[in-house]
Length: 542
Figure: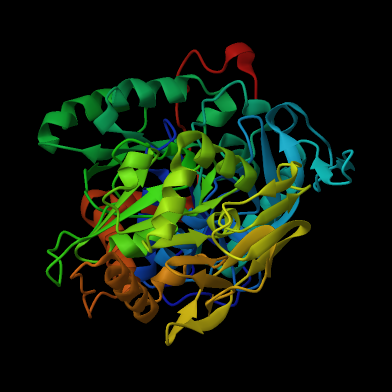
């Protein structure tokens, strides 16, 4: 491991650490899992490693200790690497506000809104993104090609301070319509001189065609960086797959450096809440009977632009707790707790709740003393009134009126890592919101930065339920209000469960990947003599 700076970390020479880009044949091929697994495997070997994703599109985000917003997947990968998350690890975060536009978060801070056409179709020469102001005075960012300099600077800083950096791509590197302005896949690989391992999900079928087609659609210059393939989610006897892997190597000149088995219940943080199926989706939970006599059923309203729905992972980790995402009022009937999660469109979520009949069903629950919890945008929706000239530009909109709260949307986003106390327990959380809540008279109890009235609770704090003592105290209150003989298990420690899951990812790499080949790529860089696979990119572009 001479090129990776020793098993103990930096050697003081100032040399640049090794690097690798994990790309995928498709979205959701397993790039995040593989990146996290490689990070955990290297960390266990004593290598100082960091994750990196140049540009992420996600509504699930996290706040670093310095107050920067990054994708939750990168925060999870940082935990796998056993390092503190940093804005350097995800310099560009896109948070969709509709099918056509996103908020752009640059180096952890929001810098404006941009349409998909503007981001993918326009370019600029500078390292910092050019911008202008729209009619509301808000900044609108112009183009993403201009961000390549910022992205590569962040990656270089991580490589100067770590022995290795494992980068994650986005979507597919063979999206030929977007290649000209790519900063996250082959554009990054070429700018930073990174070898690329392409991950394919064999569970969805067609993995050999996907590997070959992905490579053959790249230009010769891009293909020079594609060094190997890795099969993900395999079920069955690997020996039956090996002839195909040999033929793939003959066709492309590139080896397969691992066949990872299908693994249930990994429970890592997803990137995109928009991918959650509304019908019958249940969060993965511990396979264990309830500690008490009853189970506890939790229904999460699958609101539009749902963000940080990972808040309910800590609930799903409790034995005897069943968490479902729902979109119909009848699905609330047997729920012991209804959760209104975060959303990047609070006003739109309110409209959706009313159109679906869920708003009336939630109001009836509150009148009957049945528990409801609102988090961030869900907390805002439970209030009396929302004044929004920022997110939806809808002006003044009536909330559900279940909490004595008025919300005014501010141009500046609140990004914080608060620590406090609730229900007699210490609580840690993080805040990501434009809405500023004014608490009015009528609250029966302060609840973190929010309040409680009867069985209705609201807070801006994400992640609070990961605090074990607080989560157990809250679930006891919910069970009492619901009349359930549910008892939280006294020994469920969410942080330890997360660590176990990350170790499982490391085990997948250590046991089922060619780790010697991965080390060579990280240490030595792009292999020489990789053959061209015709026909290459149309017109030989990029």
